[in-house]
Image (cartoon, rainbow, N blue to C red; front, top):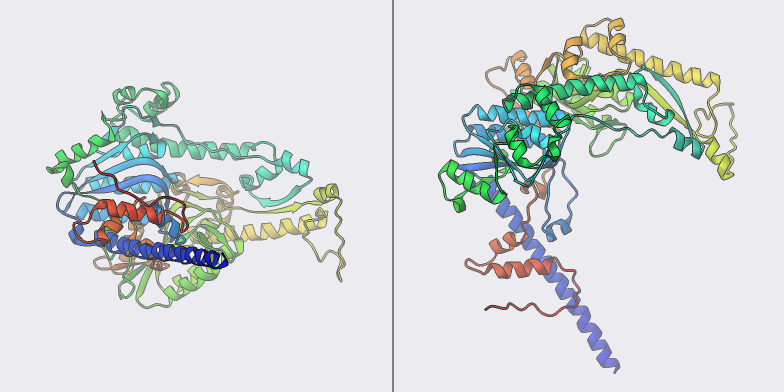
Length: 596
């Protein structure tokens, strides 16, 4: 009996390990198949004559590619995704305009998530693409406002007969938590400069202040006027007020799609299965012969942004995220950005730089360190242009303000020249909990500021002077960089945010334009107008995700099928994929293929 038990246990143990080994072995095949199969899409042979670039308008769009953590189970489950980046999308669209094998662009709308400036940059790239004479067609089961704004520039817009166009204006919702913190016994002591510096309001007020409401009302109306005007012009409607009427009076998002078509928002109502027929007629091919390519297939064919060895180099340096001391991925860490700026300043191959800023601000200390490094770069006689993305506000504007020239997208949010401090006091909470903190210090008050007692009047005054000193430093930097008086900067400062169109009028921004405009300016001022190369920093580290298209793709079965002998049955690939999706230990019958 014991012998039988041990033999059974051993066989189960071996069986589990055999299953695990098969599991891992097949995983290796999948990874190799993914790299080999998808990487080949980037080769010129993968883009045949009459190919169609598919731009998926769904999910989030980052400023630059962010390498996600490698998740083996994503591969196993066939749900491989890589976040799209604005740089990749716009580069692919530009390449498509010049590529003789690309016949059109297909905008597949499915809920893109991006800020207005990012959407506008994609849209502008599509408008420029159409100048090549090639068409852009858009289709969506349903359109969000973001989807529709980008798609509105297309030659033709198709929609599902049962879908909807969710058009609405721009707005935001803030949560005010003072009553909650009062109940908890937590209060916040604020020191700030700028009546519009409203980031502290949710902690200390029950409702939005009038200055905060007024600045947002102006900001949103200006931005929406630009967006609605763009839609109206592209769709040949009377004016932007036509869009407002469709939203506020006709409630177009709840209307039948036939009504959207009659209103001029879409051209035709079709089902997704019919889209291939449309493109087949466009390029003169059979539906089964259509070749839809992903953006990565085009970006793989260009060396733009990788000229690190060029002696005529324009550096394109990205500063994206919140400015944090010792920050992590997705933030601006001055301890890594400053050395990068210094290195570029001292590199003789780098003739000038474009700083791409997409930041709502953050650490005042970190902002100052980055600003000083940029000053050092310019002290080398090298030109510096700033290109603003979605945001370049507060600390984001601090690091931008002393550049030789500032470009921004029309829908960039910038300014917010102000500083604040927010010091919580949890004494009320600790009293409720029956907890008491006692300190012993060699110098009275040396533990200031503390969370466990309110500030004294003297301490409050000290903190206020500290913040005002920082604000004066901010104002002085802006005044110097923008060639304005300190009095003028204080007038347009006060923590107020501005849309870029208004920022141009008041001198905070020089011109509306994107990265290309900034690069051309630096090249021209550096004596490289006729010949220059661009290198993107920080350098991206290569990973398996570089081989995976930005959009979602279920590649498991196809990768296995490609790794099998020529002529093998796809059923074998499906069987292997099913095995890979299982955990190593299963209680099930053997797979049996039943045929009739």
